[in-house]
Each structure stands twice: as structure tokens, then as C-alpha cells.
Length: 149
View 1 (cartoon, one colour):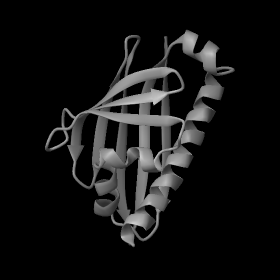
View 2: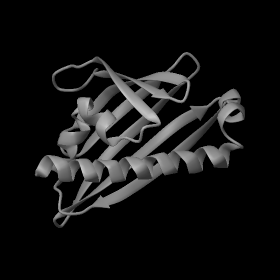
View 3: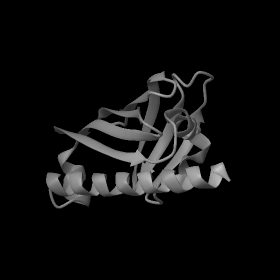
View 4: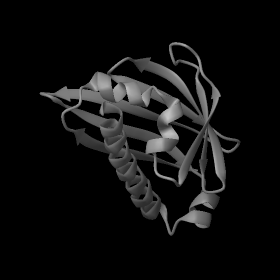
């Protein structure tokens, strides 16, 4: 099984890291701003976030995402687990004047059967992952606009 890393980011204008992090920490909002091809179900919500768990559904595949570390307003790290593999992801936020640079990095094992079933090849996987993350960033920005009203 090969591991793939992703690194996606976006400048979110006129929003502080604290405002963006509040949405990232509000797991109930994820289905409102993430693209429709990714759905979430809260399995366990823990005060302080660490050990909170979400079930993530992408296509026909499900996995568990567990918060393993966070620093309010700065970062949130996830451990991803399924029957086949374990990976990790990390949101990080950086203040740039009145804006926030939001980044998402992941380290994901991709089983050859998953590539064969859903993607043309590993590059196709990376391109589709990046497309989903672009949609997530746009959805997050729109959601931030809605909650600011």
C-alpha cells in the first residue's frame, strides 16, 4: 500500500484564525459546508475536542476520524482509521494581517483496490482529493459569511 500526502491551502479574507477555527471545531456544521460527496456523522463529542470521533462517508467507503491533538485557533490533527488502513490529517491556521491562511495536509495510505475502483491512477486520486478540498474551502468561506450575518 502506498502513502500519499496532500497539501491544500486557501487565504480566507477578513476572518481571524479564531473565527475560522470555531467552524472547524463545530463538527455539527461540517455537512453544511463540506461538499456533498463527503458526509459526516458525529460518533463521540468530547469537551476539549481531543478523542472526539466522526464517521466519514466518501462514496461507498467509511472511516473514522478522531481528533488526536488541537491548539485552539491554530491547528487540529486527526487520525483516520478504517479496517484497511490508518492515516492522518491536519488543519492549520495562520494569521496574515486581517486574513487567515487555512491549510489542510494529509498523509493517507491508499489501497490499490481503492485506486482501481474509484480512480484512474494515483495522480487521479491526488487531483480528485485537491478538487474536494477546494470545494470544502469555498463552502467554508460561504458558511462563514452566513454565520457572520
